[in-house]
Length: 200
Image (tube, rainbow, N blue to C red; front, side, top):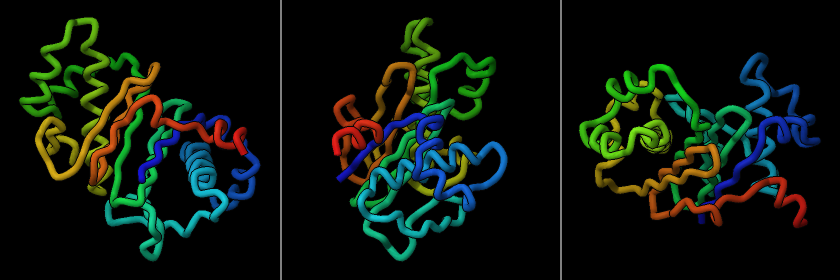
């Protein structure tokens, strides 16, 4: 089972569930996304409580004591995504498709030969979206492995591997997941915590 939830940080961090977590939340820029992520987890696991969260060697969060779920969170701008699984370690990445002054230099620095070829096949007006497509796939793979951001250069998102990678353009968002078994990220697979609340 895989569940992919997409929400707004501004909405989730103002949720009544978030107010109960304010004392645990970090200070500074990480506070609001942290509250939104914990609220998104709580909504996804409801009515069960969120288990204690521990952090791996590279900082990847996980539920303590081999809880039967694995998860990964990602945020960009006001958008936040959660991938929840009962099939093994997962990774997800979300990026708002936006201009970035140095995107071509960044692609030259971290993309594989095959990823460069994929980028070059795109029409000029589609290259920026293609950059974010490849970037989010690479990030999802690194996050599934529990790696750190600097390891992105060693990942070739086009290579055949023992796990599944799926990507979708969803409005102005580039979304990617990396899962141990096949899971296709489609518009129908994307749920909203606000939608779930309304259906109860």
